[in-house]
Image (tube, rainbow, N blue to C red; front, side, top):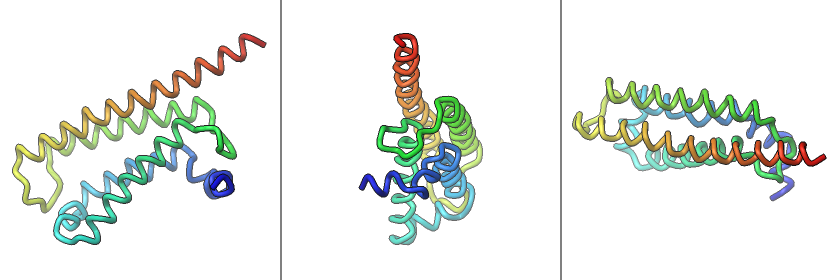
Length: 148
């Protein structure tokens, strides 16, 4: 498993902007095309969409938190900037879904608005947790630098 995590393709896959593109970019494609409606009518696309959303979210979290076994850990500036910009893109998507629901869905307006609010505030909670993880890493790094 460590050989896979430390491989060159894995190093690029956890490049924070690429992981963010796979995560939030996938959400934009899902909700701003007919994919969301199609995934509710067919079991295979439904399962694949869920798998992608969970895997992309985990990949993004892994890229931002950057645990130890990585071949190359991107700097705090890369990871922090990516987290900030990704949070903004996620919030814009949630607010746009509140104003203009995804095409082709049979859900009521109230349900779609509730879903977009959950997306907005739930995303904020996840982003705060990731920011806290980055802050702990930054604090630990500056503490080590001062003790030298």
